Image (cartoon, rainbow, N blue to C red):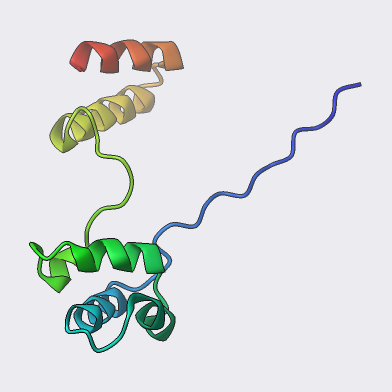
Length: 109
């Protein structure tokens, strides 16, 4: 008898407000408070705040709205084109398998 697999809950990403992050970055950069106090005060993750405040090349608005996660290999434009094609084939009831999708993305890359 096989044991049922336990479902691991999905990670919660970007549950914070960009305005709060922006104010926290300003407070840390102006040394009004440290990252721990700012993260608790503005209710933002400390590690994200540290990384964003350390990047002084970006102003606080840009640092607060930076994209999370891995960067795409194909690029945003090619990836969007691929998504449009997949949705078009789905609308025409032409089923693409995962293997087909992998093959297409490999050729594009």
